[in-house]
Amino acid sequence: MDLSTSTVLVTGANRGLGRELSRELLARGATVYAGARNPDLVDLPGAKPIALDITDPLGGRGRRGHRRCHRPRQQRGHIHRQRPADG
Image 1: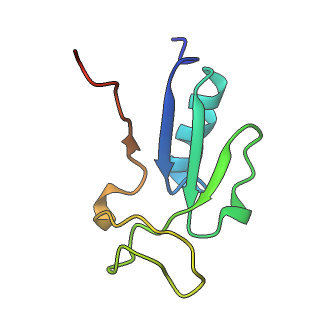
Image 2 (image 1 turned 90 degrees about the vertical axis):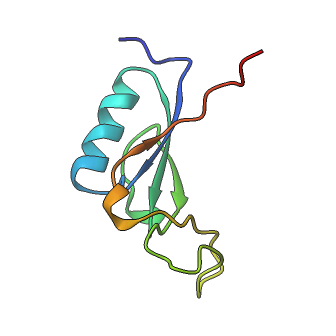
Image 3 (image 1 turned 120 degrees about the vertical axis):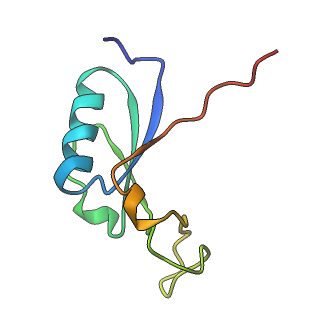
């Protein structure tokens, strides 16, 4: 499946399922934003690492000043994809 026109945000992309999902999406041509608490740990060529902590209850800026996204912990590793508006 060609995903060259797709852009995806993968949470937990520095390890486990999120890392493998990111690797497969990149192999299929997608633009991948690899969310991780520490973006320096994302070692996937072609991925765009971003600081993202889905467990931050404030949903705002953490101690280090990184912008964070608030999502329930059970959503780790899911794809958040935004489609163009219809019409």
